[in-house]
Length: 213
View 1 (cartoon, helix red, strand yellow):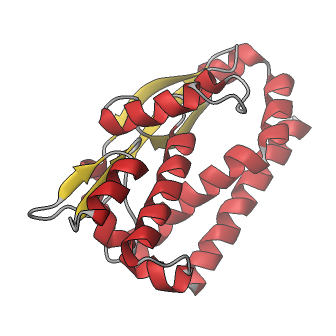
View 2 (tube, rainbow, N blue to C red):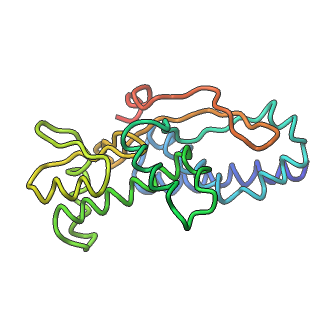
C-alpha cells in the first residue's frame, strides 16, 4: 500500500510541477494539459522506475498486468528511415544487447534528434547552436522540390549538391508546428507479468493534430 501511494503521489507531483512550468512559459488550454501529461509521463518513465518496480512488487505482477496501463510515444518499426537506424544499431559493438532498442520509440527519436541537429549545422556550415537552430525546420519540413533523405550521409550529400532536403527518420516524418513541436503518435500499453509492454491501442498524430493547433 505504501509503495503504491508513494508512486502515485510522486507521479501526481511531477505532473503538477511540469504543469506549472509550462503555464509559466505561456502554455494554455488543451495544449497545456496535453504537454504536461506527455512530458511528465516521459520523465516518470525514467525517474520513477524504482518506485514503479516497488509498486509492482507490492500489489503483485498479475494485478499490475490486469489493471495498469501506460501511455508512451509510439513510432512503428518500419520504413526506410527506421531500416537505416536499425542497421547501424544492430551493428554497434558498444551498445549492450542492441536489439532491445530496435522498437523503442525513445531511442528512435533520440537518434533522429542527433541527425536533425547535424543536418541543420551542415546546412548553414556552423557548429554554433545559435546559428543552426533556426535551420532545423528547413531540413525536416516537407516542400516542393525537396529531396527526401533517411540518413545523415544522404542528407549531407544532397546539401553539398545544392539541394533542399526533408529528413524522414526512424520515427517517421518530423514536421514542426508554430510551437516548434513535432506531434507524433502515442500508444496505450498494458504491462505483462514479465515486464513487457503489449500495445492495446494507438492514437495517431492525425487524431491529435486538431487538439494542438
